[in-house]
Length: 283
Length: 249
Ligand SMILES: Nc1ncnc2c1ncn2[C@@H]1O[C@H](COP(=O)(O)OP(=O)(O)OP(=O)(O)O)[C@@H](O)[C@H]1O
Ligand SMILES: [Mg+2]
Image (cartoon, rainbow over all chains, first blue to last red; front, top):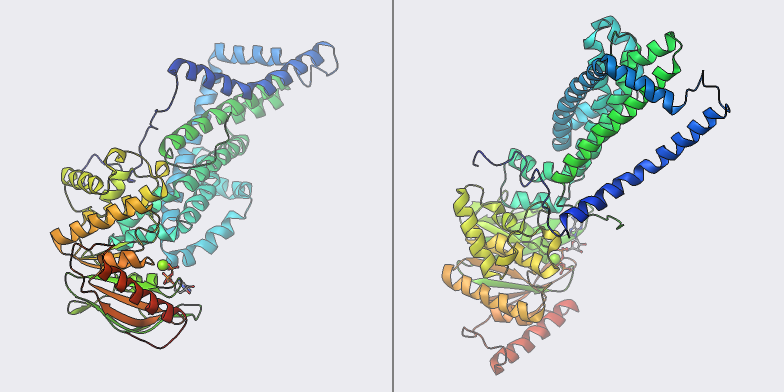
Protein backbone atom coordinates (compact mmCIF):
# COMPACT_ATOMS: atom_id res chain seq x y z
CA UNK A 1 0.00 0.00 0.00
CA UNK A 2 1.38 3.40 -0.92
CA UNK A 3 1.75 6.14 1.61
CA UNK A 4 -0.78 8.60 0.26
CA UNK A 5 -3.76 6.31 0.72
CA UNK A 6 -6.08 7.15 3.56
CA UNK A 7 -6.23 4.89 6.59
CA UNK A 8 -9.78 3.80 5.93
CA UNK A 9 -10.06 2.72 2.36
CA UNK A 10 -12.21 4.71 0.00
CA UNK A 11 -13.06 7.41 2.47
CA UNK A 12 -12.65 10.70 0.70
CA UNK A 13 -12.40 13.88 2.71
CA UNK A 14 -14.64 15.97 0.48
CA UNK A 15 -17.91 15.03 -1.14
CA UNK A 16 -17.98 15.23 -4.91
CA UNK A 17 -19.81 18.40 -5.85
CA UNK A 18 -21.45 17.34 -9.08
CA UNK A 19 -25.09 17.55 -10.16
CA UNK A 20 -25.58 21.06 -8.80
CA UNK A 21 -27.24 23.78 -10.92
CA UNK A 22 -25.74 27.29 -10.63
CA UNK A 23 -23.25 27.40 -7.78
CA UNK A 24 -24.42 30.85 -6.61
CA UNK A 25 -28.07 29.98 -6.78
CA UNK A 26 -27.38 26.75 -4.95
CA UNK A 27 -25.43 28.62 -2.28
CA UNK A 28 -28.32 31.03 -1.80
CA UNK A 29 -30.75 28.14 -1.54
CA UNK A 30 -28.47 26.49 1.00
CA UNK A 31 -28.40 29.64 3.14
CA UNK A 32 -32.15 30.00 2.98
CA UNK A 33 -32.60 26.40 4.03
CA UNK A 34 -30.21 26.86 6.94
CA UNK A 35 -32.01 30.06 7.91
CA UNK A 36 -35.27 28.12 8.28
CA UNK A 37 -33.84 26.79 11.52
CA UNK A 38 -33.51 30.35 12.86
CA UNK A 39 -37.20 31.20 12.48
CA UNK A 40 -38.40 29.57 15.70
CA UNK A 41 -35.67 31.02 17.97
CA UNK A 42 -36.19 34.49 16.43
CA UNK A 43 -39.95 34.42 16.98
CA UNK A 44 -39.51 33.19 20.54
CA UNK A 45 -36.98 35.96 21.26
CA UNK A 46 -39.31 38.59 19.82
CA UNK A 47 -42.24 37.38 21.94
CA UNK A 48 -40.02 37.31 24.99
CA UNK A 49 -38.81 40.86 24.33
CA UNK A 50 -42.39 42.03 23.92
CA UNK A 51 -43.55 40.30 27.07
CA UNK A 52 -40.72 41.91 29.02
CA UNK A 53 -41.44 45.40 27.65
CA UNK A 54 -45.12 45.06 28.66
CA UNK A 55 -43.94 44.04 32.10
CA UNK A 56 -45.63 40.62 31.87
CA UNK A 57 -42.49 38.93 33.10
CA UNK A 58 -40.24 40.35 35.82
CA UNK A 59 -37.07 41.59 34.10
CA UNK A 60 -35.19 41.05 37.37
CA UNK A 61 -35.64 37.29 37.09
CA UNK A 62 -35.89 36.87 33.35
CA UNK A 63 -34.11 39.70 31.56
CA UNK A 64 -35.21 40.32 27.93
CA UNK A 65 -33.03 39.36 24.92
CA UNK A 66 -31.83 42.95 24.55
CA UNK A 67 -30.42 42.89 28.09
CA UNK A 68 -28.77 39.52 27.43
CA UNK A 69 -27.24 40.85 24.23
CA UNK A 70 -25.91 43.88 26.14
CA UNK A 71 -24.38 41.55 28.70
CA UNK A 72 -22.75 39.45 25.96
CA UNK A 73 -21.43 42.68 24.39
CA UNK A 74 -19.95 43.75 27.69
CA UNK A 75 -18.39 40.33 28.19
CA UNK A 76 -16.90 40.51 24.71
CA UNK A 77 -15.59 44.03 25.29
CA UNK A 78 -13.88 43.09 28.54
CA UNK A 79 -12.39 40.01 26.91
CA UNK A 80 -13.91 37.81 29.59
CA UNK A 81 -16.11 35.93 27.13
CA UNK A 82 -13.12 34.71 25.15
CA UNK A 83 -11.31 33.58 28.28
CA UNK A 84 -14.33 31.61 29.46
CA UNK A 85 -15.18 30.25 26.05
CA UNK A 86 -11.64 29.16 25.35
CA UNK A 87 -11.36 27.48 28.73
CA UNK A 88 -14.57 25.55 28.12
CA UNK A 89 -13.73 24.70 24.52
CA UNK A 90 -10.32 23.51 25.59
CA UNK A 91 -11.81 21.17 28.22
CA UNK A 92 -14.38 19.84 25.80
CA UNK A 93 -11.75 19.29 23.11
CA UNK A 94 -9.32 17.45 25.37
CA UNK A 95 -12.00 15.43 27.18
CA UNK A 96 -13.91 14.54 24.01
CA UNK A 97 -10.67 13.69 22.22
CA UNK A 98 -9.56 11.42 25.03
CA UNK A 99 -12.95 9.72 25.26
CA UNK A 100 -13.07 9.22 21.49
CA UNK A 101 -9.59 7.70 21.29
CA UNK A 102 -10.26 5.16 24.03
CA UNK A 103 -13.78 4.44 22.78
CA UNK A 104 -12.53 3.93 19.23
CA UNK A 105 -9.88 1.45 20.28
CA UNK A 106 -12.17 -0.50 22.63
CA UNK A 107 -15.14 -0.29 20.26
CA UNK A 108 -13.12 -1.59 17.32
CA UNK A 109 -11.62 -4.44 19.32
CA UNK A 110 -14.87 -5.56 20.95
CA UNK A 111 -16.74 -5.19 17.67
CA UNK A 112 -14.23 -7.34 15.84
CA UNK A 113 -13.20 -9.99 18.37
CA UNK A 114 -16.01 -11.85 20.05
CA UNK A 115 -13.78 -13.16 22.83
CA UNK A 116 -12.70 -9.65 23.81
CA UNK A 117 -16.33 -8.60 23.60
CA UNK A 118 -17.42 -11.33 25.98
CA UNK A 119 -14.63 -10.29 28.31
CA UNK A 120 -15.10 -6.51 28.32
CA UNK A 121 -18.53 -5.57 27.05
CA UNK A 122 -20.57 -6.59 30.14
CA UNK A 123 -18.32 -4.46 32.34
CA UNK A 124 -18.50 -1.49 29.99
CA UNK A 125 -22.27 -1.81 29.72
CA UNK A 126 -22.47 -1.97 33.50
CA UNK A 127 -20.42 1.18 33.87
CA UNK A 128 -22.51 2.86 31.19
CA UNK A 129 -25.57 2.55 33.38
CA UNK A 130 -24.03 4.56 36.18
CA UNK A 131 -25.24 8.17 35.89
CA UNK A 132 -21.91 9.76 35.10
CA UNK A 133 -22.42 12.63 37.53
CA UNK A 134 -22.06 9.97 40.20
CA UNK A 135 -18.35 9.85 39.33
CA UNK A 136 -17.83 13.46 40.32
CA UNK A 137 -17.06 12.95 44.04
CA UNK A 138 -14.74 10.08 43.28
CA UNK A 139 -12.89 11.96 40.56
CA UNK A 140 -12.46 14.93 42.86
CA UNK A 141 -11.07 12.64 45.55
CA UNK A 142 -8.70 10.97 43.12
CA UNK A 143 -7.60 13.81 40.88
CA UNK A 144 -8.43 16.98 42.83
CA UNK A 145 -10.71 19.72 41.67
CA UNK A 146 -8.48 20.95 38.86
CA UNK A 147 -8.28 20.15 35.17
CA UNK A 148 -7.62 16.40 35.38
CA UNK A 149 -10.89 15.50 37.03
CA UNK A 150 -12.88 17.81 34.73
CA UNK A 151 -11.35 16.46 31.54
CA UNK A 152 -11.78 12.88 32.72
CA UNK A 153 -15.43 13.43 33.52
CA UNK A 154 -16.01 14.80 30.00
CA UNK A 155 -14.06 11.89 28.54
CA UNK A 156 -16.27 9.43 30.43
CA UNK A 157 -19.37 11.15 29.08
CA UNK A 158 -18.14 11.10 25.50
CA UNK A 159 -16.82 7.55 25.72
CA UNK A 160 -20.03 5.51 25.92
CA UNK A 161 -21.98 6.63 22.85
CA UNK A 162 -18.86 6.48 20.68
CA UNK A 163 -17.98 3.03 21.99
CA UNK A 164 -21.52 1.77 21.53
CA UNK A 165 -21.82 3.22 18.02
CA UNK A 166 -18.58 1.75 16.74
CA UNK A 167 -18.83 -1.61 18.49
CA UNK A 168 -22.38 -2.34 17.39
CA UNK A 169 -21.71 -0.73 14.00
CA UNK A 170 -18.94 -3.23 13.34
CA UNK A 171 -21.01 -6.15 14.55
CA UNK A 172 -23.86 -5.11 12.27
CA UNK A 173 -21.73 -5.02 9.11
CA UNK A 174 -23.34 -7.09 6.38
CA UNK A 175 -21.97 -10.64 6.51
CA UNK A 176 -22.12 -10.71 2.71
CA UNK A 177 -19.53 -7.96 2.43
CA UNK A 178 -17.32 -9.60 5.03
CA UNK A 179 -17.39 -12.77 2.93
CA UNK A 180 -16.03 -10.82 -0.01
CA UNK A 181 -13.08 -9.91 2.18
CA UNK A 182 -12.63 -13.53 3.15
CA UNK A 183 -12.68 -14.64 -0.48
CA UNK A 184 -9.81 -12.25 -1.17
CA UNK A 185 -7.99 -13.65 1.83
CA UNK A 186 -7.67 -10.32 3.66
CA UNK A 187 -5.68 -10.26 6.86
CA UNK A 188 -7.53 -9.32 10.04
CA UNK A 189 -6.18 -5.78 9.88
CA UNK A 190 -7.03 -5.42 6.19
CA UNK A 191 -10.53 -6.69 6.86
CA UNK A 192 -10.97 -4.09 9.59
CA UNK A 193 -9.51 -1.26 7.55
CA UNK A 194 -11.06 -2.08 4.19
CA UNK A 195 -14.50 -3.40 5.12
CA UNK A 196 -15.47 -3.17 8.78
CA UNK A 197 -14.51 0.44 9.47
CA UNK A 198 -15.97 2.00 6.30
CA UNK A 199 -19.15 -0.02 6.70
CA UNK A 200 -19.44 0.93 10.38
CA UNK A 201 -18.69 4.58 9.71
CA UNK A 202 -22.33 5.78 9.64
CA UNK A 203 -22.95 4.32 13.10
CA UNK A 204 -19.63 5.72 14.29
CA UNK A 205 -20.52 9.25 13.17
CA UNK A 206 -23.84 9.03 15.02
CA UNK A 207 -21.91 7.87 18.09
CA UNK A 208 -19.50 10.79 17.76
CA UNK A 209 -22.37 13.26 17.61
CA UNK A 210 -24.07 11.93 20.73
CA UNK A 211 -20.67 11.74 22.41
CA UNK A 212 -20.04 15.38 21.65
CA UNK A 213 -23.47 16.30 22.99
CA UNK A 214 -22.67 14.52 26.24
CA UNK A 215 -19.25 16.17 26.37
CA UNK A 216 -21.02 19.55 26.39
CA UNK A 217 -23.37 18.35 29.09
CA UNK A 218 -20.53 17.14 31.24
CA UNK A 219 -18.40 20.23 30.84
CA UNK A 220 -21.17 22.16 32.57
CA UNK A 221 -21.26 19.67 35.42
CA UNK A 222 -17.47 19.73 35.65
CA UNK A 223 -17.25 23.51 35.69
CA UNK A 224 -20.05 23.86 38.19
CA UNK A 225 -18.20 21.64 40.63
CA UNK A 226 -15.57 24.31 40.99
CA UNK A 227 -13.67 26.29 38.40
CA UNK A 228 -12.16 29.73 38.12
CA UNK A 229 -13.00 30.14 34.46
CA UNK A 230 -15.22 28.65 31.81
CA UNK A 231 -18.82 29.12 30.74
CA UNK A 232 -19.98 26.81 33.53
CA UNK A 233 -18.14 29.00 36.01
CA UNK A 234 -19.96 31.98 34.50
CA UNK A 235 -23.26 30.22 35.23
CA UNK A 236 -22.40 29.74 38.88
CA UNK A 237 -20.96 33.24 39.10
CA UNK A 238 -24.22 34.66 37.70
CA UNK A 239 -26.14 32.80 40.36
CA UNK A 240 -23.83 34.00 43.17
CA UNK A 241 -24.02 37.60 42.04
CA UNK A 242 -27.77 37.42 41.22
CA UNK A 243 -27.21 38.22 37.56
CA UNK A 244 -29.76 36.21 35.53
CA UNK A 245 -28.57 38.02 32.38
CA UNK A 246 -25.10 36.49 32.86
CA UNK A 247 -26.63 33.06 33.40
CA UNK A 248 -28.72 33.34 30.24
CA UNK A 249 -25.76 34.75 28.31
CA UNK A 250 -23.69 31.69 29.14
CA UNK A 251 -26.61 29.37 28.36
CA UNK A 252 -26.87 31.03 24.95
CA UNK A 253 -23.13 30.60 24.44
CA UNK A 254 -23.46 26.90 25.29
CA UNK A 255 -26.23 26.55 22.75
CA UNK A 256 -24.22 28.37 20.06
CA UNK A 257 -20.99 26.46 20.69
CA UNK A 258 -22.73 23.11 21.00
CA UNK A 259 -24.61 23.63 17.77
CA UNK A 260 -21.49 24.91 15.97
CA UNK A 261 -19.31 21.96 16.97
CA UNK A 262 -22.08 19.53 16.07
CA UNK A 263 -22.41 21.21 12.68
CA UNK A 264 -18.68 20.69 12.14
CA UNK A 265 -19.08 16.98 12.89
CA UNK A 266 -22.07 16.74 10.57
CA UNK A 267 -20.08 18.39 7.78
CA UNK A 268 -17.12 16.06 8.29
CA UNK A 269 -19.49 13.11 8.44
CA UNK A 270 -21.32 14.11 5.27
CA UNK A 271 -18.03 14.37 3.40
CA UNK A 272 -16.93 10.95 4.52
CA UNK A 273 -20.32 9.30 4.03
CA UNK A 274 -21.17 10.75 0.64
CA UNK A 275 -21.37 7.23 -0.78
CA UNK A 276 -24.46 6.39 1.22
CA UNK A 277 -27.55 5.61 -0.76
CA UNK A 278 -29.88 7.02 1.82
CA UNK A 279 -33.43 8.31 2.03
CA UNK A 280 -33.17 12.07 2.04
CA UNK A 281 -36.61 13.64 1.62
CA UNK A 282 -36.44 16.42 -0.95
CA UNK A 283 -37.22 20.08 -0.31
CA UNK B 1 -7.74 -29.88 -9.65
CA UNK B 2 -10.68 -29.07 -7.36
CA UNK B 3 -12.24 -32.18 -5.91
CA UNK B 4 -15.02 -32.89 -3.44
CA UNK B 5 -14.73 -36.23 -1.68
CA UNK B 6 -17.91 -37.59 -0.09
CA UNK B 7 -18.82 -34.12 1.08
CA UNK B 8 -21.85 -33.50 3.29
CA UNK B 9 -22.99 -30.23 4.75
CA UNK B 10 -25.37 -29.89 7.64
CA UNK B 11 -26.15 -26.33 8.77
CA UNK B 12 -26.30 -25.26 12.39
CA UNK B 13 -30.09 -25.45 12.32
CA UNK B 14 -29.85 -29.14 11.50
CA UNK B 15 -30.75 -28.85 7.81
CA UNK B 16 -28.86 -31.29 5.64
CA UNK B 17 -28.04 -29.26 2.53
CA UNK B 18 -25.65 -31.66 0.81
CA UNK B 19 -25.11 -35.37 1.24
CA UNK B 20 -22.26 -37.50 -0.04
CA UNK B 21 -21.23 -35.35 -2.98
CA UNK B 22 -18.33 -36.63 -5.08
CA UNK B 23 -17.34 -34.17 -7.75
CA UNK B 24 -14.15 -33.08 -9.46
CA UNK B 25 -13.49 -30.11 -11.70
CA UNK B 26 -10.77 -31.05 -14.18
CA UNK B 27 -8.02 -28.56 -15.00
CA UNK B 28 -9.07 -26.10 -17.67
CA UNK B 29 -12.65 -27.31 -18.09
CA UNK B 30 -15.91 -25.49 -17.67
CA UNK B 31 -18.13 -27.48 -15.34
CA UNK B 32 -21.79 -26.52 -15.34
CA UNK B 33 -24.04 -27.19 -12.37
CA UNK B 34 -27.80 -27.02 -12.78
CA UNK B 35 -30.58 -27.85 -10.37
CA UNK B 36 -33.77 -26.57 -8.83
CA UNK B 37 -33.89 -23.60 -6.51
CA UNK B 38 -32.67 -24.40 -3.01
CA UNK B 39 -31.04 -27.71 -3.96
CA UNK B 40 -27.66 -26.64 -2.59
CA UNK B 41 -25.80 -25.17 -5.57
CA UNK B 42 -24.59 -22.06 -3.76
CA UNK B 43 -23.64 -24.17 -0.77
CA UNK B 44 -21.59 -26.40 -3.06
CA UNK B 45 -19.63 -23.41 -4.39
CA UNK B 46 -19.10 -22.03 -0.90
CA UNK B 47 -17.61 -25.36 0.11
CA UNK B 48 -15.40 -25.43 -3.00
CA UNK B 49 -13.78 -22.11 -2.17
CA UNK B 50 -13.38 -22.81 1.53
CA UNK B 51 -15.85 -20.18 2.69
CA UNK B 52 -17.65 -22.82 4.76
CA UNK B 53 -16.20 -26.12 5.96
CA UNK B 54 -17.87 -29.43 5.09
CA UNK B 55 -19.52 -31.37 7.91
CA UNK B 56 -18.21 -34.63 6.48
CA UNK B 57 -15.74 -35.37 3.70
CA UNK B 58 -12.98 -33.26 2.22
CA UNK B 59 -12.41 -30.66 -0.45
CA UNK B 60 -9.09 -30.93 -2.26
CA UNK B 61 -7.23 -28.33 -4.26
CA UNK B 62 -4.52 -30.26 -6.12
CA UNK B 63 -2.99 -32.35 -3.37
CA UNK B 64 -3.89 -30.15 -0.41
CA UNK B 65 -7.17 -30.07 1.52
CA UNK B 66 -8.89 -26.69 1.45
CA UNK B 67 -9.22 -25.14 4.89
CA UNK B 68 -10.10 -21.59 3.89
CA UNK B 69 -10.26 -19.19 0.95
CA UNK B 70 -7.15 -18.96 -1.18
CA UNK B 71 -6.10 -16.55 -3.92
CA UNK B 72 -6.05 -19.21 -6.66
CA UNK B 73 -9.79 -19.73 -6.28
CA UNK B 74 -12.10 -16.87 -7.24
CA UNK B 75 -15.83 -16.63 -6.64
CA UNK B 76 -18.55 -14.52 -8.19
CA UNK B 77 -21.42 -14.45 -5.68
CA UNK B 78 -25.05 -14.76 -6.62
CA UNK B 79 -25.44 -11.06 -5.66
CA UNK B 80 -22.99 -8.31 -6.68
CA UNK B 81 -21.79 -7.58 -3.13
CA UNK B 82 -19.96 -4.39 -4.05
CA UNK B 83 -18.54 -2.10 -1.38
CA UNK B 84 -20.92 0.88 -1.50
CA UNK B 85 -18.18 3.32 -0.44
CA UNK B 86 -15.81 2.40 -3.28
CA UNK B 87 -16.10 3.48 -6.89
CA UNK B 88 -16.63 0.86 -9.56
CA UNK B 89 -12.92 0.85 -10.44
CA UNK B 90 -11.92 0.59 -6.80
CA UNK B 91 -14.34 -2.28 -6.31
CA UNK B 92 -12.82 -4.08 -9.26
CA UNK B 93 -9.35 -3.62 -7.76
CA UNK B 94 -10.50 -4.95 -4.42
CA UNK B 95 -8.63 -8.25 -4.67
CA UNK B 96 -5.42 -6.80 -6.08
CA UNK B 97 -4.00 -5.48 -2.85
CA UNK B 98 -0.51 -6.85 -3.43
CA UNK B 99 0.16 -5.03 -6.69
CA UNK B 100 1.52 -1.52 -7.32
CA UNK B 101 -1.13 1.14 -7.72
CA UNK B 102 -0.59 1.83 -11.43
CA UNK B 103 -0.79 -1.84 -12.28
CA UNK B 104 -3.99 -2.20 -10.27
CA UNK B 105 -5.62 0.70 -12.05
CA UNK B 106 -4.58 -0.57 -15.46
CA UNK B 107 -5.92 -4.05 -14.79
CA UNK B 108 -9.16 -2.69 -13.40
CA UNK B 109 -9.77 -0.59 -16.49
CA UNK B 110 -9.01 -3.54 -18.72
CA UNK B 111 -11.46 -5.73 -16.82
CA UNK B 112 -14.11 -3.01 -16.90
CA UNK B 113 -13.60 -2.67 -20.64
CA UNK B 114 -14.27 -6.38 -20.95
CA UNK B 115 -17.64 -6.11 -19.22
CA UNK B 116 -18.50 -2.87 -21.02
CA UNK B 117 -18.37 -0.56 -18.01
CA UNK B 118 -15.28 1.50 -18.68
CA UNK B 119 -17.14 4.81 -18.67
CA UNK B 120 -18.55 3.97 -15.23
CA UNK B 121 -15.14 3.48 -13.62
CA UNK B 122 -15.64 6.45 -11.29
CA UNK B 123 -19.31 5.88 -10.49
CA UNK B 124 -20.48 4.69 -7.09
CA UNK B 125 -22.38 1.38 -6.83
CA UNK B 126 -25.61 3.21 -5.98
CA UNK B 127 -25.52 4.70 -9.49
CA UNK B 128 -25.49 1.29 -11.16
CA UNK B 129 -28.36 -0.88 -12.32
CA UNK B 130 -28.58 -4.44 -11.01
CA UNK B 131 -27.03 -5.87 -14.15
CA UNK B 132 -24.22 -3.31 -14.17
CA UNK B 133 -23.46 -4.10 -10.55
CA UNK B 134 -23.24 -7.79 -11.38
CA UNK B 135 -20.92 -7.04 -14.31
CA UNK B 136 -18.71 -5.09 -11.93
CA UNK B 137 -18.64 -8.11 -9.63
CA UNK B 138 -17.60 -10.31 -12.55
CA UNK B 139 -14.82 -7.88 -13.43
CA UNK B 140 -13.69 -7.95 -9.79
CA UNK B 141 -13.34 -11.73 -9.95
CA UNK B 142 -11.58 -11.67 -13.31
CA UNK B 143 -8.82 -9.17 -12.49
CA UNK B 144 -7.11 -11.46 -10.02
CA UNK B 145 -6.78 -14.14 -12.72
CA UNK B 146 -7.58 -17.09 -10.48
CA UNK B 147 -6.78 -20.56 -11.72
CA UNK B 148 -10.22 -21.72 -10.59
CA UNK B 149 -13.19 -19.41 -11.04
CA UNK B 150 -16.47 -20.28 -9.36
CA UNK B 151 -19.52 -18.47 -10.73
CA UNK B 152 -22.85 -18.53 -8.90
CA UNK B 153 -25.59 -17.66 -11.41
CA UNK B 154 -23.49 -14.72 -12.55
CA UNK B 155 -25.73 -13.65 -15.41
CA UNK B 156 -29.18 -14.25 -13.99
CA UNK B 157 -29.77 -10.55 -13.31
CA UNK B 158 -28.95 -9.52 -16.88
CA UNK B 159 -31.09 -8.96 -19.93
CA UNK B 160 -30.90 -11.59 -22.66
CA UNK B 161 -28.64 -9.54 -24.93
CA UNK B 162 -26.06 -8.59 -22.29
CA UNK B 163 -26.18 -12.11 -21.02
CA UNK B 164 -25.36 -13.62 -24.40
CA UNK B 165 -22.63 -11.02 -24.81
CA UNK B 166 -21.03 -11.80 -21.47
CA UNK B 167 -21.30 -15.52 -22.07
CA UNK B 168 -19.26 -15.09 -25.25
CA UNK B 169 -16.83 -12.90 -23.30
CA UNK B 170 -16.50 -15.62 -20.72
CA UNK B 171 -15.69 -18.16 -23.44
CA UNK B 172 -13.07 -15.73 -24.82
CA UNK B 173 -11.44 -15.30 -21.43
CA UNK B 174 -11.55 -19.01 -20.90
CA UNK B 175 -9.91 -19.71 -24.29
CA UNK B 176 -7.18 -17.15 -23.56
CA UNK B 177 -6.26 -18.16 -20.06
CA UNK B 178 -7.82 -21.58 -19.62
CA UNK B 179 -8.86 -21.24 -16.00
CA UNK B 180 -10.98 -23.99 -14.52
CA UNK B 181 -14.51 -22.71 -14.23
CA UNK B 182 -17.43 -23.99 -12.22
CA UNK B 183 -20.63 -22.34 -13.33
CA UNK B 184 -23.85 -22.62 -11.37
CA UNK B 185 -26.87 -21.64 -13.40
CA UNK B 186 -30.56 -22.34 -13.72
CA UNK B 187 -30.44 -21.55 -17.41
CA UNK B 188 -29.97 -24.74 -19.41
CA UNK B 189 -29.13 -22.79 -22.54
CA UNK B 190 -26.34 -21.05 -20.70
CA UNK B 191 -25.01 -24.30 -19.26
CA UNK B 192 -24.97 -25.91 -22.70
CA UNK B 193 -23.39 -22.91 -24.38
CA UNK B 194 -20.51 -22.82 -21.91
CA UNK B 195 -19.87 -26.18 -20.30
CA UNK B 196 -17.64 -29.12 -21.11
CA UNK B 197 -19.53 -31.13 -18.53
CA UNK B 198 -22.85 -30.57 -16.81
CA UNK B 199 -23.89 -31.92 -13.45
CA UNK B 200 -27.60 -32.03 -12.60
CA UNK B 201 -28.38 -31.81 -8.89
CA UNK B 202 -31.39 -32.86 -6.91
CA UNK B 203 -32.38 -31.34 -3.61
CA UNK B 204 -33.35 -32.29 -0.04
CA UNK B 205 -30.70 -33.30 0.60
CA UNK B 206 -28.57 -31.90 -2.20
CA UNK B 207 -26.80 -34.57 -4.21
CA UNK B 208 -25.64 -35.25 -7.73
CA UNK B 209 -28.40 -36.66 -9.86
CA UNK B 210 -26.71 -37.04 -13.23
CA UNK B 211 -23.61 -36.02 -15.10
CA UNK B 212 -23.24 -35.31 -18.82
CA UNK B 213 -20.18 -34.73 -20.96
CA UNK B 214 -21.13 -32.21 -23.61
CA UNK B 215 -19.46 -33.16 -26.86
CA UNK B 216 -20.70 -30.16 -28.85
CA UNK B 217 -17.90 -28.46 -30.81
CA UNK B 218 -17.02 -24.86 -30.00
CA UNK B 219 -18.02 -22.20 -30.83
CA UNK B 220 -21.46 -23.51 -30.04
CA UNK B 221 -24.48 -22.56 -32.08
CA UNK B 222 -27.59 -22.34 -29.98
CA UNK B 223 -29.86 -23.00 -32.90
CA UNK B 224 -28.11 -26.13 -34.12
CA UNK B 225 -30.09 -29.38 -33.97
CA UNK B 226 -27.43 -31.03 -31.77
CA UNK B 227 -27.73 -28.17 -29.28
CA UNK B 228 -31.48 -28.57 -29.24
CA UNK B 229 -31.38 -32.29 -28.69
CA UNK B 230 -28.93 -31.81 -25.79
CA UNK B 231 -31.29 -29.29 -24.37
CA UNK B 232 -34.10 -31.80 -24.37
CA UNK B 233 -31.96 -34.44 -22.67
CA UNK B 234 -30.93 -32.00 -19.99
CA UNK B 235 -34.45 -30.76 -19.41
CA UNK B 236 -35.64 -34.33 -18.99
CA UNK B 237 -32.87 -34.98 -16.46
CA UNK B 238 -33.69 -31.78 -14.59
CA UNK B 239 -37.35 -32.70 -14.41
CA UNK B 240 -36.45 -36.13 -13.17
CA UNK B 241 -34.16 -34.62 -10.53
CA UNK B 242 -36.80 -32.21 -9.32
CA UNK B 243 -39.51 -34.87 -9.27
CA UNK B 244 -37.22 -37.28 -7.47
CA UNK B 245 -37.11 -40.01 -10.10
CA UNK B 246 -34.24 -42.46 -10.48
CA UNK B 247 -31.05 -41.38 -12.24
CA UNK B 248 -31.14 -41.77 -15.99
CA UNK B 249 -27.89 -40.45 -17.37
N1 LIG C 1 -26.71 -20.60 6.52
C1 LIG C 1 -27.71 -21.48 6.34
N2 LIG C 1 -28.34 -22.03 7.40
C2 LIG C 1 -29.34 -22.91 7.24
N3 LIG C 1 -29.79 -23.34 6.05
C3 LIG C 1 -29.21 -22.84 4.95
C4 LIG C 1 -28.15 -21.88 5.03
N4 LIG C 1 -27.77 -21.56 3.78
C5 LIG C 1 -28.57 -22.28 2.97
N5 LIG C 1 -29.43 -23.05 3.65
C6 LIG C 1 -30.39 -24.00 3.10
O1 LIG C 1 -29.69 -24.90 2.27
C7 LIG C 1 -30.42 -25.16 1.08
C8 LIG C 1 -29.54 -24.91 -0.12
O2 LIG C 1 -29.26 -23.52 -0.20
P1 LIG C 1 -28.44 -22.93 -1.43
O3 LIG C 1 -28.31 -21.47 -1.22
O4 LIG C 1 -27.19 -23.70 -1.60
O5 LIG C 1 -29.45 -23.22 -2.63
P2 LIG C 1 -29.27 -22.93 -4.19
O6 LIG C 1 -29.26 -24.23 -4.87
O7 LIG C 1 -28.11 -22.04 -4.42
O8 LIG C 1 -30.62 -22.18 -4.51
P3 LIG C 1 -30.89 -20.99 -5.56
O9 LIG C 1 -30.90 -21.57 -6.92
O10 LIG C 1 -32.25 -20.50 -5.18
O11 LIG C 1 -29.82 -19.96 -5.35
C9 LIG C 1 -31.66 -24.29 1.12
O12 LIG C 1 -32.75 -25.11 1.41
C10 LIG C 1 -31.42 -23.30 2.24
O13 LIG C 1 -32.60 -23.09 2.95
MG1 LIG D 1 -27.90 -20.08 -4.96
